[in-house]
Image (tube, rainbow over all chains, first blue to last red; front, side, top):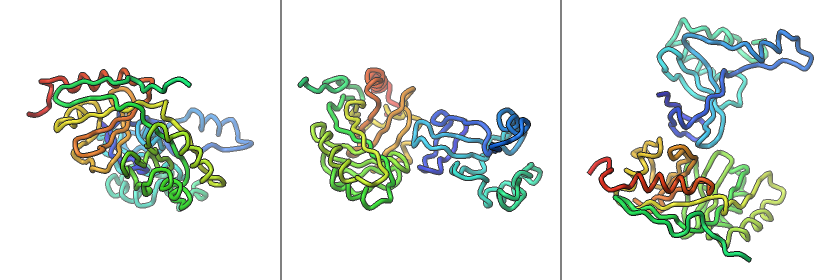
Amino acid sequence: MLILTCPHCGVTAEETELALGGEAHLKRYGPGDSDEQFEAYMFARKNPKGVHFERWRHAYGCGKWFIAARCTVTLEVFGTYPAQTARPPADLLAAIRAKRPSADLSDWDAATPEDAQ
Amino acid sequence: MSEPQSALPGRRAAGFATVAEAGLQGMITLRGDLASPVLAAAVQQATGCAMPGPRRIVQAGDRAAAWMSPDELLLILPHADAPGAATALQAALAGEHALVAEVSDARAMFAVTGDKAVQALAKLFPVDFAAMEPDEIRRSRMAQVAAALWQAAPGDWRIVCFRSVAAYAFGLLDNAVRPGSELTA
């Protein structure tokens, strides 16, 4: 059983109160993007063994979207944060790096979202 | 004009706790910027209640203001007063980015009372009741339907759900309070 804390209302909710929304931080390019970029946005998904960022909706509660960083192997939850952001909070990334030095967080190596492009 | 009817008028069930359909209840959904002083004044005007903090319900007599999400409140008031209060709110919030909807007849409300009422609710809600504050409102699910619950007084729980699922909700509660099905003595 996965238990997540909604960052909007503070409720510690278990899985059945929430709805999964798939991989977080997908980037849609465009207008004028290439077919490859659109295909990647539409279909390409990470399937990591380890740290994963996922969108969740507190469907039976406050109804808001948030993002959870968790481990797909151990179900350890590193943290949750509101979905209205382009990148994970720096303190959360630091905590994950400290706990899982081998995790692939290369998407977030750059200091700002603009640098990440 | 036809007489308003609640979802399951007068339905009651008694077991180790008592379940009763709570009758007609006025409810207004108010969405907007909860930090706005104009909105807070409008809530005060309609219910006599201060703006509730996150997940809190402020009760004053037969009226209450409940925090439903970061941009939504549920105002609870007598059924007959709801249409007038909704109109007054609409006027008070002119110019604000806010939405007022009277939802009295879209909802059903139940009262579950008794010292062991929480044991019946614990069977149906995925909620940590030990961690719940007396003035907390919790939106969650009751078995398979969305519901919210709070305490009007210690041991006096109120549950609201959609009217369309009132019969299902009553059936759940009726079953959960059957004598002999207590979780602890």
